[in-house]
Amino acid sequence: MRYFADVAALARKDLLIELRAKETVPAMLLFVVAALTIFHFSVPVKSVSVNAQHQVGLGLLWTAIIFTALLGLTRAFVPEREQSVFDALVLAPSDRSAIWLAKAFSVFAFLALAELVAVPAFGLFFFNVGWQTIVALLLANIGICAVGTLTGAMAVAGRARELILPLLFLPLSIPIVVGGVGASIIGGQKYLGFLALYDAVFVLLSWGSFEYVVAET
Amino acid sequence: MVSATKLSKSFGAKRVLNKVDVSLDAGGFLLVTGPNGSGKTTLLRVLAGLDAPTSGEVLLPDRGVIGYLGHEPLVYRELTPLENLHLFGRLYRVPDRAERIGMLLERFGLWEVRDQHVSTFSRGMRQRLGLCRVLLHKPELVILDEPFNALDVAGSALLDATLDELGPRSAVIVATHDPERVERLATQRLAFA
Figure (tube, rainbow over the protein chains, first blue to last red):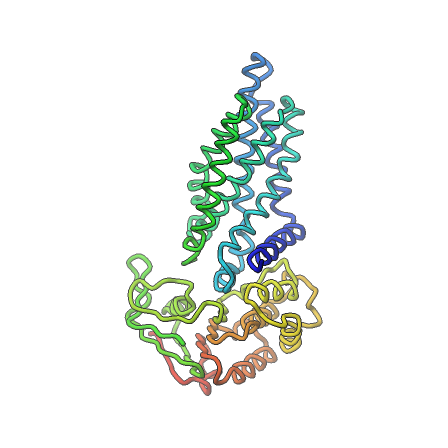
C-alpha cells in the first residue's frame, strides 16, 4: 500500500505542477489541432474513394497522436531536470519504479486530454471514428506512456536529450502505430489484442528496468 | 559509514578523480576544497551514490539515510515549501512529518512563506528550503556541495549552527570555496589541485 501511496503522491505532484504551470497540456492541444488542420488542407482525402479516405484519414490521426505524445513526453521530466530534483527522488528509499509509474499516469492523463480534443477535431475535419479506434487509442496510450516515460527518463541523463527521446521512442512506437491503424481500419479483435499484448510486455519491461535506467542519472 | 578506495572517475578521456581514498564514520567531517573543475562535485556525487565510479571501490550506506544538497536545492519550483517537504517526507519515510516540517521551516525562516510557490523565492530562500529537504529525514550521511552559496549572513549563521548540531550522529561531507567557514568542524581534509 505504501508503494501506491508513493505513486499517488508523485502523480498528484505532476498534475499540480501542470495545473499551475499550464505548459504541457495547452502545447499538446495546440499541436494536435494544428497538425490535424494542416493535414486537412494538405491531404485532399475528399477527392478519393470513401475507402481510401478512411485509410488515409485514420493514418493521419495516428500520426498526429504519436507526435503529440512525443511532445508531451519531451516535457515530462522537465520539472525534475531543471532543478536537478531527479537526484533527490532517486536517493529516496522508496521503490524507484514508483517514479516511473506516477510519471506514466500523469502523461496518460495529459495524452487522454489531448485526445478528447483531437478525436472531435478529427471528426470535424475528416469523419467520425468508430468505437474500435477509441478502444485502440486507450490501449495505445498505455503503451505510449509506459515506453515513453522510460525513454524520457533515459533522455534526462543524456546530454543530447532532445535528440535521444525521439530516437528511442519513435522506433519503439512503430508496433503501436501498426496495431492502432490496423484496429482502426481493418477492425476485429486481432489488432486490439496485439495492442494489449504490447502494453503488457512493455509495462512489465519498463516497470522492471526503470531502477537500472536511473541508477546513474 | 562511507568509504572509497582508489576511486577514479573519468568523463571520456578526461580523468576527474584519480585514485581518491575516503573513509568517514559517524561524527566525522570531511572538508573538500579545490578550484572549479577540480572534481569536488564529481566526488560528492559518487559518494552520494548518484554517479558510479569508473574504477575503485565505494561502500555507501542505504540511500534512505543520505541527505544530499547539490548545486541546486533539488526542490520543485512550482510547489510550495510545504508541498515540497510533504512529498519528500513521504518518499523518505519521515515519521511525524507535519511536526518535523514545521520545525524545519521555522528554523530556516520559511514558515511565513510556507504556502508561497518556490518560483517566487530568491536563490537564498530556495537554498534554505534545500537545506530543510536535506535534513528532513535526519540523515546519517550529509553531503553538501557549496552549501553557503546564495545564503545571506543570517542564512549562513543558521547553517553554521546546524552543522554544529549534526555532531556525533552524522557523517558530514562539505565541498566549499570558503573553507575557513567550516574549518573548525573538519576532522579530515581533502584538497584537490
